[in-house]
Picture 1: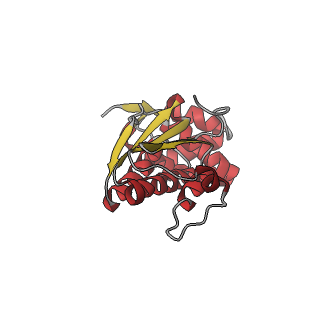
Picture 2: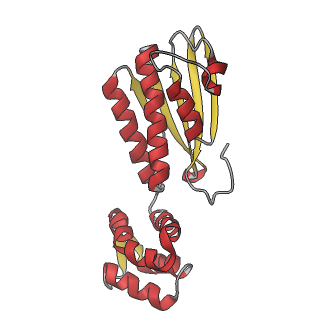
Picture 3: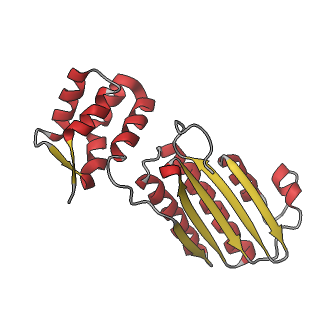
Length: 212
């Protein structure tokens, strides 16, 4: 298994805390072997977590976590899940979480993404019967694009659904409105031959804006 030099991890720590404390923190976490297996980077992040938080709080912890995990070649790629029943909704949610974790995303953002994907997939299962969820990392993992497509009957009163005035006994529309509030960009195209929802979530707030 490939490895990264401890010097690379140390350089990241020294960007944020004093060299003395950085070296001591890293030594406690991994010893002095000189290299760290890439597959163990998540364990290293966890071992450093408490010390980093003491120096700079949760925000610094998130920043260092992303930088250390980025030392590993990204295994994240587009994920496509076909939706036809409830178990597919669960699979889509789990896939969203796993993809975000691979990209080094913060826990709160992972929850937003997983909830949005779950709601969109459930809408497909309940109202369209069949569809596809596609999740694509953008700009090296700075953002995630979620596209959900189906061939159902479409959304009859989309404007009312999205402005929150639509009332339904089945709850249809609430999930879509909730997703709109969870994501950073949102677009819906619907008609009698199906619906396409596209949403984008910024995973790294330091990336400087939306990814196209």
